[in-house]
Length: 185
Image (cartoon, rainbow, N blue to C red; front, side):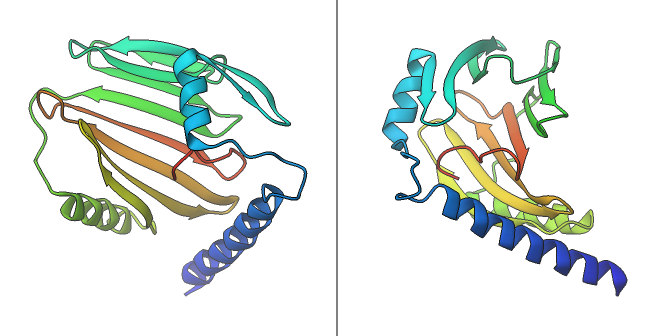
């Protein structure tokens, strides 16, 4: 029962923090919000100026025989591990991480609902709550974004699978509440 009370309290803290963060970025609070297209253009060009934050410069790492581009802010990750079949990027101080994995065989071809349900059930089996935020099928990529509560607020996650020629590349990104969630979450 005590564990359930702790989870409920963590959810409430995270909800209050999310509301507070949302108010900070609302128009009229002196912060200009970029459109999704402005962000995409800046990332494609390798530089993005964030009002009130400064300029971000992006690095691109091309991975695996499929030549998958992994794009991330330069200097963000303090830990970088590359192998033939995986890339792991992390920054413990910023509580952010990113992985890309090349599987030895095709992954199971679940539809979006089955995949999101499997993520939610897997988190629950591990003792975690997953709040699914968005599911999307794009031309060559599917993704599910979700958040989980922690003692410090929400942890935002995005899991994706790339299916251009086969179903062998999957990846994930995560960040805690002290980082701004990625666009379109």
